[in-house]
Image (cartoon, rainbow, N blue to C red; front, side, top):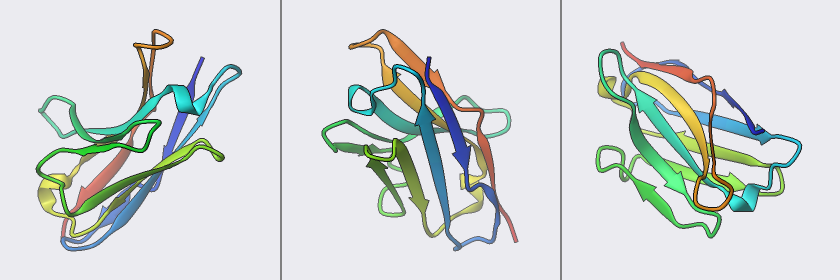
Length: 120
């Protein structure tokens, strides 16, 4: 199985920055067989994709975060990061790390989530 542990959430003022990190582990975890992603779920709303990065380094962003957020990964450390700049109150949500290998291994794993609150 795959374990994902997020860190880096917290309270930040509008316009500020945060960096989220996700550490992946597991007895049979092979980082390059997964597309890694960050999702978020605001209160009363559905979970939505924020950004993802394939094993080949191709990135995808939701339109609402383009130009402000950057996703990166380190296969040697089995980590995926989300640098969030110019944060807005509407970015407030629980952010979840995801490891998707449904097409290769038939596996899809989620972290426990980390809360990001953007408020003055």
